[in-house]
Length: 216
Image (cartoon, rainbow, N blue to C red):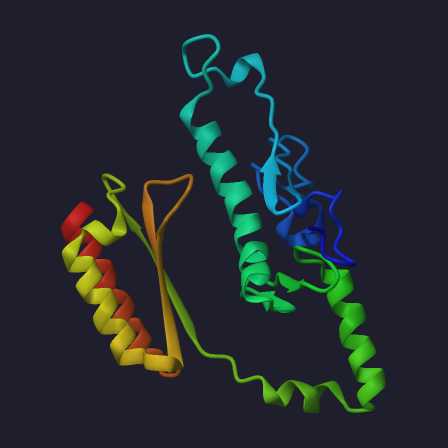
């Protein structure tokens, strides 16, 4: 089922704002890149990519591993946010990098559309932007990239799971954590948000140390 007003025939990556459109894997402004494209096909997100002969992994007919990792990373990252919006029925989503998803209009971030929607709100409310944004109270965020020797499933590492559970109990409803592996590098990414900067830095450090002790 297609959502009314959603653009289904334009690649997710083609909505990226210019400053985020230079990824080697999927950036539409990177002419030397792979130009990976992802689309909604009904309820599924699809990505079709045909490797060239020089993408060989050493044996003709087999793609090299980093190409496969790029496909997974670029396609997965672009569709994860849109899929969550559909699942929860949210009309607004985004991330710190600047992407804002307006689910009633499109399925990926679009800087120009975001600006137009803000202008529409300003006109309708007759309020200054400084007053409207005062309702937003951003929390500090910290992130650490931890080099790893292997990508063992996160939930199979007891020490990491314990550190994550303690962090969730400490933060409660006033913060969140995200631990995942990079799709293209041998690194684990740890992100922590919360009200107190020193607290989230300490939590991020504890989780990172737990990962190092397991697979660092």
